[in-house]
Length: 391
Ligand code: AMP
Image 1 (cartoon, protein in one colour):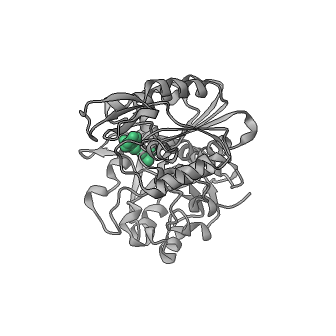
Image 2 (cartoon, rainbow, N blue to C red):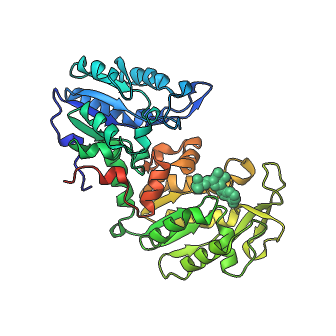
Image 3 (tube, rainbow, N blue to C red):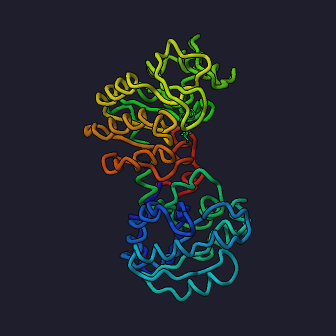
């Protein structure tokens, strides 16, 4: 990584503003998954042990520049205090005089948290004044919010113009693991790409086609690939653009693109719609492709067992419905049992799959950022990373 890391900085007695991604899922007012909070703990503990006065800030939900009571960071503050085993002070704000007062009373090794950054319209607008205001609260800026790094906001980009700006430990690990997965020098590499639509993933497919040996294709996008080959893609509406994109990839001369030999289909896009299995050369025109089939799953698992690098983004089927979840589950297990491979999973729904199957510990890295890891795999520069100080 060519960005400076907080691990190399003396923070003793300094006030450090840390941007984290505490945009945790909530159900009935309670946090239903605290893994994003846990993922920030190494950086927060490093700062505490180094004697910093740490000011934490995050967005939560989409309040669109105004105060929304249900989107206050109170539940996050409570859970964070439990995990850190120290009180975290509520600095309020995120703008105005409140935060200054709370921060001026912090001792070394203590924590305060600002209120939801997106209560302030200047945050998403990357407003120069709000960026300066945030910078005025601290001596050093740390970005550990990989999940928000694809956004150019005041707390992820603007602020870095006014303070020394370092990567946190989570940010560092995300960038290292994602970059390593695209490094072709480490032996045979496979990318597994699925999801709903080819349009969402074409840029990822294009970028990865130059970087890996094999691409295993799954999800709704297989219909576009079948049509590009002159076969039936079933009943799903596939645009000419999708077919053209799929054809371009098949003809690109890059990675070997593997399509499923069989598929699971249903007449309706519905959980209880009766499923059937068909060879890919023989997909009925009235059926929707909702998963890769058992032969394809076995073949994908075999290919996955042979490689030393695995990148996976996007489910093989409609994994939310048990009848169409087998392809994703077989692939997830194949990734988990290949112990000699470095395996990296883009966040979002793919992370959900390995989480639900209890396989997270057996994967080298499960990204905390869905959109951010997708843009990284597309080959884009993430504004929140570009803004950090170079080595
Ligand atoms: P993404 O977040 O882009 O990786 O897409 C995830 C979504 O793709 C999930 O909600 C899946 O249900 C959906 N998906 C996967 N396979 C299919 C398919 N064959 N048809 C329609 N949607 C699919």
